[in-house]
Image (cartoon, rainbow, N blue to C red; front, side, top):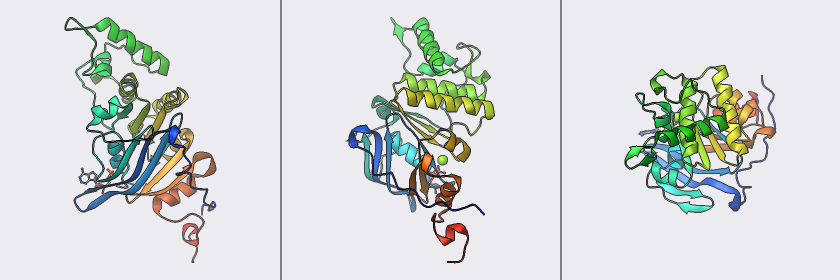
Length: 269
Ligand SMILES: Nc1ncnc2c1ncn2[C@@H]1O[C@H](COP(=O)(O)OP(=O)(O)O)[C@@H](O)[C@H]1O
Ligand SMILES: [Mg+2]
């Protein structure tokens, strides 16, 4: 039986408004009779990595989609740099500095790496794609983040899972994401590629960006996150500073056993 840690203080309301890069306040979202999110608050500050964890169906992807402009909330508000905002679309969220790498990555298989990085925003001269400029910027961002591909003129169809993830991240970065959101970025990756994606997240953070990462891999979460936001059945089950909690407390929050109680310890109450 895992030892039960006393509950760490909840940090969800300690953010100063001026530090807040991206936030949710009392957000709810339903799909028909399914209450996917209920009264959720969320904070992301500049220069931190926040992991969102929870069981299947807990509401993680719905949260990501509201943060990234895919859905508006039914109730509650989205905040960007402390200001209330209503995204009209993911493009609108991008324009406000919120860049999301969705689980399916949304890459175009038949196009090469640089084209995918610039998809829909290719620089042009007299109506012709400015290939050299595109290549130079792509190489610049790949070098900065240590993203490796065999060649930026290779079609995406020929890349590995980790290389594709790198292309999708480069696109988010080049679109100026002050906040970069990633939904299960390493789900399809091996150990080395996963470590590499974690390094990219740390570089994003060290540049002063905010990173939101959804993952069910708690080892990864403890490796990279500064704070851990647990959702359960559409509600926030707890927000913990990663240095002041541990694996068993987070599992208890995910499962709904309250840390520090007899129930969590498996003891009769
Ligand atoms: N587009 C949708 N239509 C209907 N139900 C949905 C839709 N998206 C999510 N849900 C439901 O909302 C709940 C939360 O889903 P989701 O946010 O995808 O959870 P998670 O990402 O944590 O697995 C689930 O019960 C899911 O079935
Ligand atoms: Mg999901």
